[in-house]
Image (cartoon, rainbow, N blue to C red; front, top):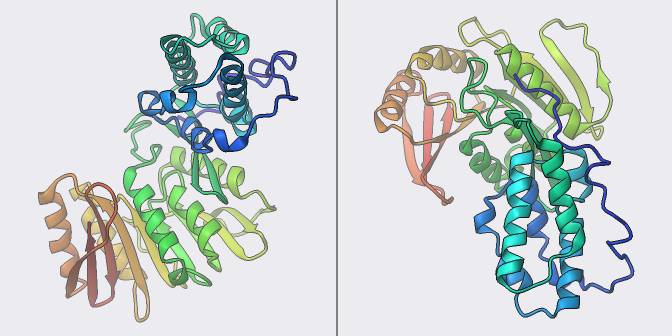
Length: 352
């Protein structure tokens, strides 16, 4: 189960202000802001452009850049509050030190201090399997998720942020006009990345997150309150686990929804789902729920990763029995992805 574990307190990673001299005149243009987003997302350290950052600098400038680099990664306000895992940060600092030594640069004292403090703190301890990961979706949409690195945890796949959620989030932002002012229900919302992006970037009138597993609902509730803030309203409706308002424009709800039961939730304009098309045993219940939800002038958008063609073909055969026809066309994203559009009497599949 996801916990509230944090590997480092504010005091552990508070910089030594005597070493981080704020009077240095460092041109922000020399520091690519993507380093912040990459660190907070736990981007593979081997893919950081270390040489580009420190290449052809004299010693004084190198030390200044190292200090600025720490400020924008380890000591960034989000990293202090919602840090990546201890294992990732150890590797991050170890790689930084190694790259600096390979380039013949003097390693700033605060870099060594941060690394040794982390080693001392984590000695004899194993990293928790849950952690924070922050996604800079756009410069104005920053989302911090509490998630797990396990593909299956507590008997569910819903505690992991799957790739289709990222792809579909970007598609929704590219087509924000579709969702503006609409009432949306997301099936199998998992940890909530897709919905958080739509709420922050597309201004829907209402957004309802749904899932069924208790551990997923608990983790999702935490991610919603962490990222949306606002005023949480206790609902007298027992089917609503959480209700809040986002910026006074979007009503946000979290509900438990079992596809095996008859769906009594109506009044939505759009149904969303990301990475739901992977378990053949769920197709009958899923399509039954869609049949209950979809009607005239209502549409569902599904994004999925193509892992097994036979599974996907079976899904198409199952939904065609309800949604009579479809159209196949392309949507360009990195990697092979499907995005499915489902209408009553019309199923459209977007194939990358």
